[in-house]
Image (cartoon, rainbow, N blue to C red; front, side, top):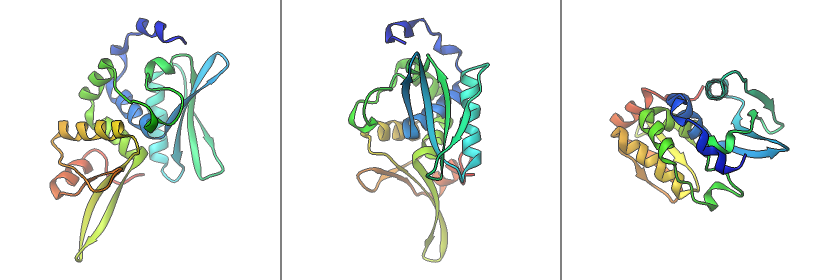
Length: 197
């Protein structure tokens, strides 16, 4: 679908919670490819987390009412949650050639409005794709930590801006990794993320 036709979409009717979660997953593990007259969204997820797979499928179904995403197993221990539609390039205008970290990733104003309305879901989608929750042994005391790893500076900045909006302090402890260590901060993330399932 030509980008010029995207202006006819009413993005305000998208459910903010489902869209923000799927946007987070897409920015981490999603990609869109053309298949003749349609586009195919694929979100590649680890099959040992059926709860995340089901959450992704549910989000797609809520965005594309009347259609149902499918799950395709891959030989690598992952699955693709997938759906064909001519609308994906409009719904995810970050779509483009090449890896995401080699091109600008900037949210459209309507996307930012959805993220602002459902910031927790956006952070949850990013963590479910490119993040982890670990329980570390801190001098004999169990300590929860969250890490988010992405090679795109723009995507890391979107993650950090979302944490800032939620009042969750973070640190960048290496070039590509954003970490949340403080006890109150990890407890806040546990309220809407928690262990992967």
